[in-house]
Each structure stands twice: as C-alpha cells, then as structure tokens.
Image (cartoon, rainbow, N blue to C red; front, top):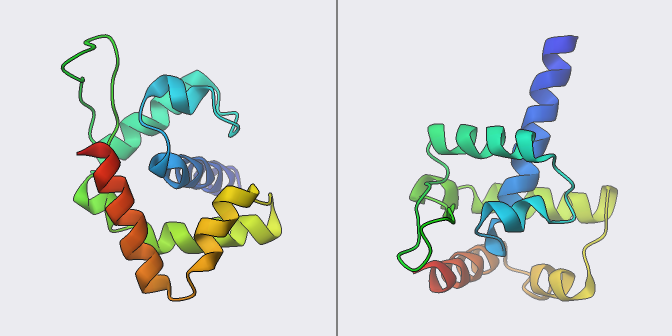
Length: 126
C-alpha cells in the first residue's frame, strides 16, 4: 500500500505542476503558488519531469540566477490530459477562479481549446 500511496502522491503533485505550466515559468513562481508544494518536493518533481522529457531547464539570457522550465513537445502533448484533469479538479476538488474557468469552459470543442492553450503557451514562451 505504501508504494501505491507514494506513486499516487507523486503523480498528483506532477499533475499539479503540469496544470500550472500555462502561467508559471520559474521555480519561484511554482514555489509561491497556491498549490503549496514544499520546495524540496518541488525541486524533486521538476527534476523528475525534466528527466522524463516533459520539461526542459534553461537560463534566460538576461538573468543567469533564474531557471526557466518550459514544456517540451512531449510535455505539450499532454495538453488534452491536462485539460481533462483541470476540469475534473474544478468540479471535484477546488473550483477555478472566474477568469480561469471562463477560458476553460467558453470553448466547447476541446480540440479548439487544446489548440488555443498550446498557441497561447507558445506565444508566451517563444
């Protein structure tokens, strides 16, 4: 049972992190977020997501002290899963704020929503 609990907890934390990638880019932004993930756990999860190829770690040219964690193509391919997980979380665990909920629910076609999320993410990060 302990293995299952650890694996389930790890996957939930990884999912929380992935859901927030559309609005957070740095360790500080993740650690100060409402997700309340301890910094040592956050560091471990970011390294895990990097090792499995969902994110990369890079330094911006204007600030060598900060690390950015952009999604990779593999990470972006999780967008349909993240949409479903975010919607499920909204209805079963914690409602989104009005601004977030409007974005996620105003577009009924999930393929269009996926395209919009990926487009907005790429515009912010490239």
